[in-house]
Amino acid sequence: MAEIYLGLTESGASLLPPIRWTGGQSPEMGISRSKQIESAVMLDGSRRYNIRSKHPRKWPLAWEMLTTAEMATFDLLYSYNTALYFQNNWEGPTWRRVVIADYDPEPVLGLGPATCRWNLRLTLEEIR
Image (cartoon, rainbow, N blue to C red; front, side, top):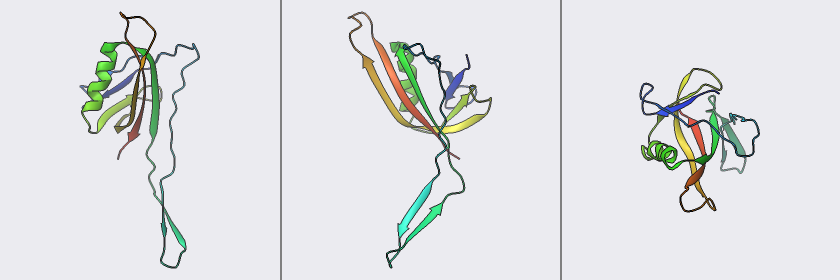
């Protein structure tokens, strides 16, 4: 299974937990490359569009059944609130600068009092 790293520096990046799906389906690593378009209304009512020449990538990632310790790693990375280094070996060895654009942890309920698990969805967005 390919490894994913995220951290403040390349050498200090944390190895993220392997992506686990409880449904048993094969993992899919999506990469979004939507175009960045700005639109403005001119004084005469016409619209003008500015299509940017660079379009940052986005990586929507999701984990199921994370332990409390694994979740603490993500909480720490999210708390930095700055650009991070990201390596996704599913697509190649290139290090990229990213920010955590979306962070949505959710506790898994109904597992009993001794078990605490988390599901996490996050989106990383490339910065240049």
